[in-house]
Length: 209
View 1: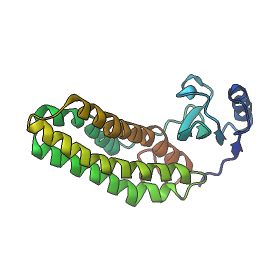
View 2 (view 1 turned 90 degrees about the vertical axis):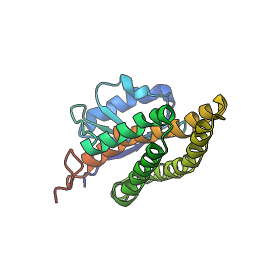
View 3 (view 1 turned 180 degrees about the vertical axis):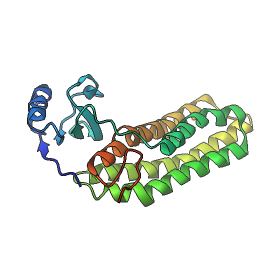
View 4 (view 1 turned 60 degrees about the horizontal axis):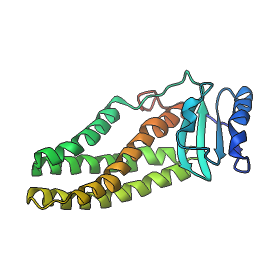
């Protein structure tokens, strides 16, 4: 397991954060962790000297794994295909209003939950500093499972011609927005961090040992 230093910068004013992080990178160019107050949403996108894997993000606590910019672990192809299906087929449910398509979608999402809970999250919890991020992901699973109840209700209303616009908009916000956020974090931070930190895992997420 790759061991990297953690720098707790929560007492630092956000205006001082980027210059200090760049200084720290000069001393730890193989990677390091930081915890700090968040300067703003997606503020790391303008940084070129390192790649920021944002595992947990809140105004007063943002956990980031900084890794070399040339290191770009990718989401395994199977997982990427699964994410694409979950995101793209949501809109199709309301276009076709097909009960079988709904059952397939719900089954696919539950399979995703079970695979992550049984495999990815237990492995991630063996890595340093990642426990809060995994805990948040588990909470998101709970929210998405609850959101599936709303999905069934809204689709039923749509089939009966009784769906009102506000109900669909609320489902989009409460369920689909959470799903987008959840899958994005897995794709952009969780899997890359796992592959980077654990030498027993290759870039496809397969164990080498």
